[in-house]
View (tube, rainbow, N blue to C red):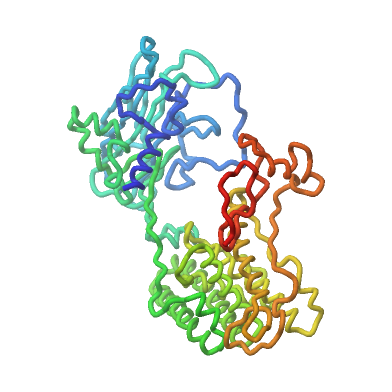
Length: 586
């Protein structure tokens, strides 16, 4: 319920109308609403914005890119000027070739200034048209007055596969009375909606033989019914209006339907335009049949190779069985599908071999297995420090990703060091933990090679991992999570075992080495710019120290203190002099 309320409020905030179809606004609606505003086609700014960036992405105004160049002189192409609101919008969809007509309902709002009340008053408009699809091009006027007109243009193309591509575009041809840096609000169209019902059952746009690239093949079961032009578009196959208040999604239609019953037919149309699109993405299922719980604590104590293999092998077997099922499906595919499927299965098999190599290295090499146990102990410990009483359970894809990278980390000559692995999963899926585990494995393996090897241990210190993020806030947040992992690793580095040896190890580990992970601490650093470099640290008024010690809460400088709480107990590490509430680290 709360999610629905939030979504509805966002729609009303950015698209409107916030107070219903007959709303009154004190401020200019052109400034209030950031989307769903169609400006007049004839308007031109006083100062030209210059040509569009030649490298910018073009507008896709059809189901197939090849159709974009086929517009004849009397057809309308949607505008795509950067930094200027659209002058037209619409959608493109496929129908069977024997479809001869469709019904179109267009609703929109316009605002006029009430000079007496100093308010902007909104009015709802609509028009329903039955449009023939037997020709190539149709132009229909849906509004005409002294202030200009609003047009609907319909273009029809036959694709040669017993289908028609239909494009419906609305163009604002209202007049403007003056030139300025922005169009007049009264000549703009607000919150417009195009809704289409087609005689017969609409077809999905994608066919089995239409795969142009691998991505189309992967998403072959996600058919594209409709595409937006200068907006988004929704079809019955992905309609979500039943989950959102209809008066928010289509405020004009809901109100006008009470007076004009013919509008009722368009409340659940075959296709419709949308300026604030929604799409429900189900939470992925992480459970795999025959794969038990992958406990970080249990894996940290899996020093015996047989115990480790017993935990990991079911995961590998399940992945191999899934690949085998893909091979069986491949045999029944036609040639068009096989050319994509074979490449995908080949990469799956390569990933499987990398996972198997990772497990083999853990079984055959004590230092790799100890680093793996150490990494799991680090993840388990930092998980508990985050005020979680439960054990950390790996999701299968996390362990698979971890194992897949072990051989490349362990073997400097590995061919897979040239491979860039992308771990893709929605936010909250567990990417960071997988990365942190690999980091912990890498830094501990370097130290173990130094302490257990016969060479110069000094070469195994220094920077081991470099992380780079694209957003400042994301960098800070991820750094703090990394710092908790590093702190856990440092805690385990100086951990005193029962026999007095320093350096954590599994209880069954028979390695008797003091300072197992070296005598140099594990640490993490963050590049935060020149403002905290030695020459600027104490610079008067703008230096990091002055900012830290200042009690002025209205200072505009960024916060130089990025580590403000203890990674282990979450207690405040430093407080400004104006802070009156004090806590101590237990």
